[in-house]
Length: 127
Image (cartoon, rainbow, N blue to C red; front, top):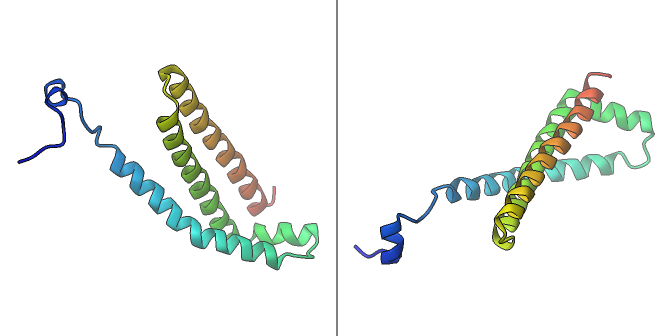
């Protein structure tokens, strides 16, 4: 059986961390989820053209609109974080900076998704 690993790589035990497939699938699943969610959002915003502020608030406060909005937020920020992670891993070569940037991107994604989700929940529950 032929292998693509070098003799030195086999001796050192270096090879795949076995995490790339899960990351790849997560990117693809979030991308596929974003297609209908983004289309729904664009159609919803276009339907609100010319609506008053109160009508727009009422529109997104409805549960059947708040749930897709929450799903959009989660998928969007997770997909963005996964994509930025790949860019950082590929182009930042200094290990300390790479770890700091990865933590910053993950933290910002969590913070922004939480804030956006809170805003939607506040609308939905009339806060």
